[in-house]
Length: 271
Image (cartoon, rainbow, N blue to C red):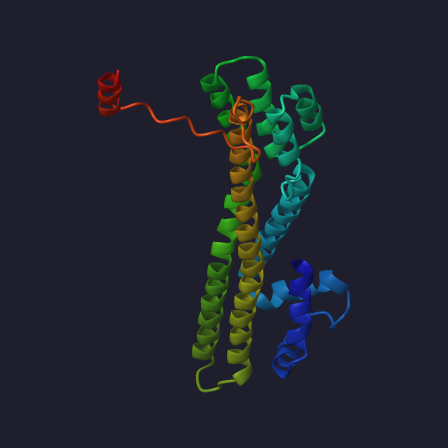
């Protein structure tokens, strides 16, 4: 995000207002000098005291986004192709094959399915196994959601920080105008407006990517939760497909209806 902020500074510095602002600050380094660090220094100098806070928030947001991407890729949360073949092995009674396949898989869905299969294979009552599976699933979901509340908070407060910079910039501009009295210089007002607009732009640049990434990450976590629940359910219901009387399509035959009292009376009369 710091790179984007530097690019925004370079874009704005091409305008006449930016040139006037740089001319009004002799201590500011020339455009392009020092690269990104010089651009960040100019941002802090021109944007006022709110800009350092915004830069710190942007670094935190970028660190959270990169950490979550690495975590999601390592946990393979974007794929669950192993669920169907493992469920087929369990329905066929191949517990060893299912356990071997799950041992090679990583991620929350694999952990939940592995716990459910191990519990069923050990002969532990289903109620106890379900409790343990739910505990593991919740722990995995909590791990995936770690850092997302902070990212959501950054997406919320970044525009507010930009608004704060806008207000402080305008207040500073009008204070300088009041102190100037009759000798009003348009450059005084333009510098305050520059500070106000700059902090607003920085706030939006931070908030928009943070909000988008938070939405995508939260959607991925919800999808993982549903996949884990589906995988555990397939483990617990595998016995339904191993009972006698299965049709060609894998569905159990419908049992005949229980005889009613009227049918019993007709049978007695027939005798």
